[in-house]
Image (cartoon, rainbow over all chains, first blue to last red; front, side, top):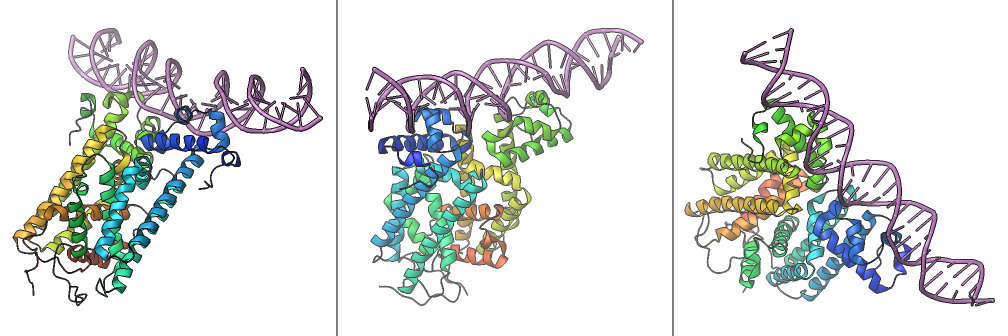
Length: 220
Length: 220
DNA sequence: TTCAAGATTGACCACCCGGTCATTGACCGG
DNA sequence: CCGGTCAATGACCGGGTGGTCAATCTTGAA
């Protein structure tokens, strides 16, 4: 992983120091958010001097963006892996797989997740906004493609609006992940049975009769 | 509206000065977030001196919490009004009414909305976290009650999980409102037709066949 | 008209911020 | 052992912070 916002000096650093810096940045930014994070605390945690840090990343913003770059890269890799692994599975299983691997990621990288969720509304700078918007669009396109594949397989009716479906799925998944990562209010996401029920609900909605069209497929 | 975090001095102030302070606070906090908001800029906008402000609210936090208190009060009033007004309408209409009045609120009070969304993940202090959690739980219970009423009316199958449904609705509504309030990415929420499609989608899900039970109601 | 009581003010405080740069000292070819 | 190189350092800078308080102004009863 090459961080585009780092200087050459950083890239020539030994790996252990690089990771020490990134780890400290993760910790500091996730705990306090971008604005409140302190470069002074950060260098103390990283065990280097302030002067050095500014040799590696030209500014606070550059360091933060590097971190975001790293996090989004990992998420992208994860999503691709899940997509490929579950390619042959029926839609409900795929959705469950995506969701539970998302939960696993959030549990495994709580600090990166916190940064992401912070970013989600932080809106502190236009740069952040834009990056976030791009990320959301990508996530939605990803889900949309999953739905379209299911539609081609005949698992969904031919008239289902996959774009709208992806919007809804994205909103709900995002909320579930936020619940999984925050300490409070995530009763719904813990148990596997709950996950099944959620996926079923997303597939069938509130069980309201379908509106005329979009209802001829049948599955065993 | 009595703000519990204000001092007696504030409560004895003439209404115009009170509202000037609240307006300036709204502006400042919404534009910069809690931590980055500056009390210096704030008093300048409000047209009073810093000393006075600290006589009215003992600290930055007290002022902020007062603002949140005010905003959540307004939201509560709005939701109650919509609930009562739409009591006799069928479920799809009720959902659409809730959603579109939410959108109207967000458009009318963009600064309060921004503070809310900021709070949604800000998580800066435990106090904020707790207040936010309470608000979300209330919103979900509100939606749950709407769904249960619809179930009693026979508009939903008797086995529909209203708690889960409320969770999903809440997540999607929240996302739609965020889209409506942010400048970017809200293509889906602008047109009324899009709202209809969204509600239909939430009612019917992805049109997947229902899982065995929960499927005997029929409507003309 | 006087003057005490309370409201209002803004200069001031200690502190912390992101960022800089002269100094330091470890390393190395000769 | 030297002198040169260059990464690492942390004292320092201008500026902004939330919060305080002695001084000033306003008010209204005597």
